[in-house]
Image (cartoon, rainbow, N blue to C red):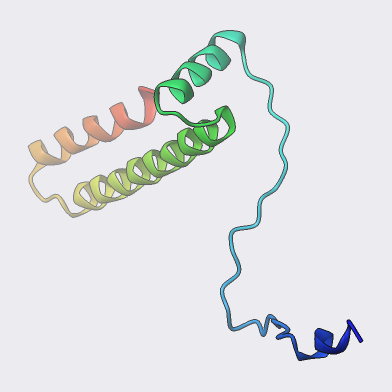
Amino acid sequence: MRFQNVYKRTILVHTGAMKSGNKTVRQSLSLPANIATQVRNLAKTRKLSSNRMLVELIENGIEAEQRKQQEFFKLAERFRNATDPEEAKRLGDELGRMVFSD
């Protein structure tokens, strides 16, 4: 019989203990033409697909926002703990620039 070995194969079962890969979500995105051109050019120079380039740009942007938020909280903590009025004013001005310059 040609199907004798069918039952001797190993079956891989996901137990939940194994880490599954990142799940992807299909997302539609409209970009201005000049941004789409820049993404394609970046992707070409790095030999990536436009989709992968967008993912990397978004990941980098998220990391930058998180760093900016951490810097803000550190500065706010220094401002709250400042005892010297001149330092408090300088830190307050710096906080103001961080908040209102964007």
